[in-house]
Length: 210
Image 1 (cartoon, one colour):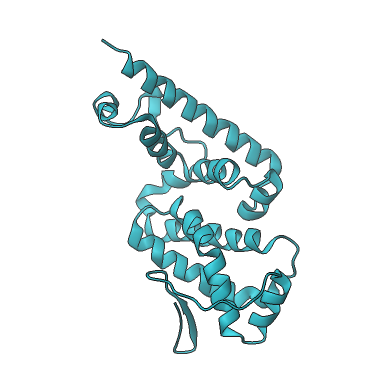
Image 2: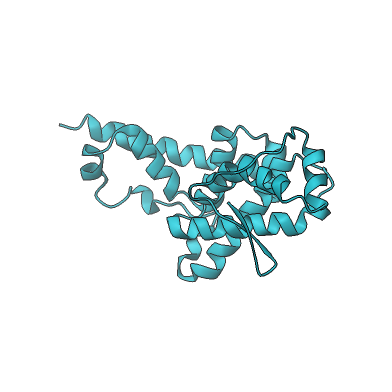
C-alpha cells in the first residue's frame, strides 16, 4: 500500500490492496496526482508495479534488493511527475526511471562485478558454458536453461532482449528507456540473440551425447 512517512511517499508491494479511482486517461491520472490526490497515485502504483518489478528484476537479481529499488523508483516517479510532459507513453517514462535506478544501484553496490555493465564482454569466455553445464542440464528443461542463460548475459543485453521480446517494446521505446541510439539497441539485441543461440546449441548437443 501507499504510505506517507516523514513527508516521503512510500509504496509497498507485499499484499498490495489499493483503492481505485475511475481513471483510464493517463493525463487525467497525472493531473490528479499533481493536485495531491493520493488515491490517484495509488492507482498509478497498482497499474505500473508489475512493469517496474519486471524491469528491475532483469537487472538486479537479489529479491530483497529488487524490492528496495522498486521502492526508490516509485519515490522518484512521484517526485518527478510534475516534469513529465507526455513526450512518450507514461509506461515508457516510468520504465526509463526503473532502468536508470537499477543500473545506478548496480554501480553503487556491485563494484567488484563491473563486468555486469560491460556490454562488450561475452558471459562465457572462450566459448565455454557455465560451470559443469552438462551436469546442470540433466536436471533442467530447456526453458529453465534459457532463462538461466538470459540472466547470465551482460545487463544491457538481457534488458534489451527482455524489452523487445517479452515486453514487445519498439526500438524507439527501448531507446527512450535505456537512452541508447536505435543502432546500438539493434546491435545489442543481435549480440544477445547470438549468444543465446550458441548456448542453446550447446544444450541440444549435450542432450544427444551418448
